[in-house]
Length: 187
Image (cartoon, rainbow, N blue to C red; front, side):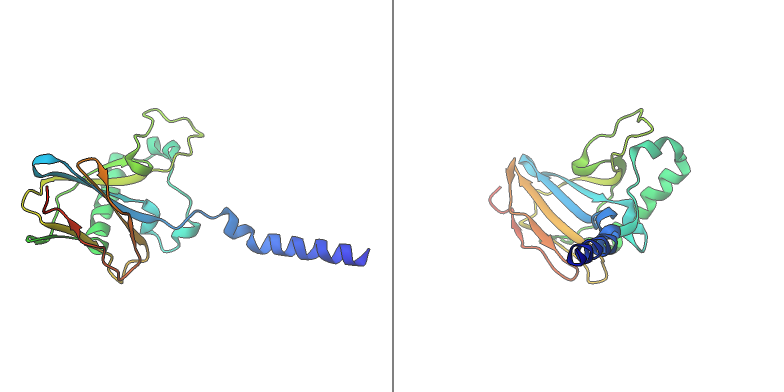
C-alpha cells in the first residue's frame, strides 16, 4: 500500500511541476514567405506574433480575434509600427546583385499562414491574431535571394519560398544563422 501511495505522490508532484509548461503557448517563429511569379513579380510576407514584443513570449497568451473589436485604431497603428521596428531589427533580407533589401511593407491583421480573420468575431473566438507585413516588388534582376537571422533575435526565422508555384526547401534559422541562397537565375 505504501508503494502505491508514494507513486501517487510522485505523479502529482511531477504533474504540478510541469503543468505550467503544459499550459504555455509555443515560442513564436517568424515565417518569411516569398512568392516568386513569372516576369519578376514577388510578394514577401512576414508574420509577426505580437507576443514577440514582450520579454516572456512563452508565457504570454495569444492576442485573439475576440479581442480585435476592443482595440482602437490608434492601438492598431501602434502595433503595426512595433511590427515594422521588429522586422527592421530582426530580419535581414538580401538579394544578389542588389545587396540588402529595404522593403516598404503594408500591414494587416491575419492568423497563421496569412489566414483571414472573421470580421465579426464571437466572444469565444480564440483564433490567434498575427501581424502580417506584405511587400510586393519586382525581383526580375535578382539572381539569388536569402535571409539572415541576427544573433540579437530571440526567435527562429522560417525561410519559406515558392518559385512559380513550386515549393522550395524550408530553412529554419536560429539566431545568428543565414539561409541557403535561393537560386533565381533560371527564371
